[in-house]
Length: 287
Image (tube, rainbow, N blue to C red; front, side):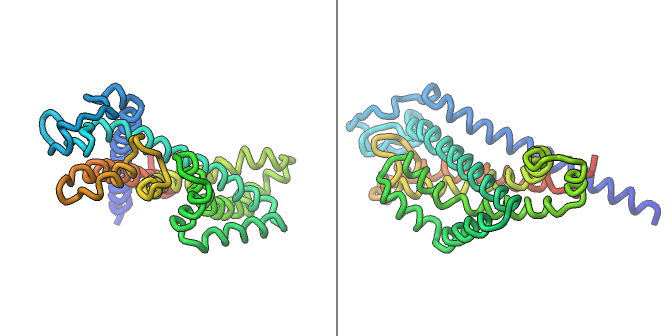
């Protein structure tokens, strides 16, 4: 019986080291995606917007790794350039939604009262509608363009973070250490900055990373339906829309941007899952 506890601790440490290794790998892959997006124009073997009808709809080959589209544009170059729009537009969207939703949630949880009741009923109203359908309606009213697509998705994406931040704030607000900090004379803003925000940042960060894949799919969905970027701008969702009518004769026109979306979403989802495991309080207590 005496050796049971050391053995359990050893297994837990091995598990913790395994989680750290996975987190390092997925973080490195995510960083690689961001670097590719930044330097996409320099990495392109061809001009992604140059048309050459003589090589239109060529199958993947050594000259064109992902083939060409109906206008003879190199699909590999367009996928690379499209990564900048798709990835960074998604990151901007997630950052806006996270910041605004968290601010609303913390405000409601900390101050309560009529403000809390009103904002939470508004969030319930937004959550009652299917998110993508609501985003389609908002994007349709605002008109096309990547900026309006981001605004439409941000308009319907903040309630989730508001609910999460409010619940975490209420949990911290009723904790004994915060009551002691209040008795010591700390003001409300100081308590928020020094105690509340650092303690709720972890779960919000994990949720934001996990939400990157969902937001990317929804942003690509709006572009696919013509409510995102405008042609000839390269973006993965709009590229799938451009090639869908030729799926049977030129499947690479759809599969190339589809594969890019799949790989990117998978990497960020795995990063979020691993980050959640890494920030688990039971795991963090192990050295």
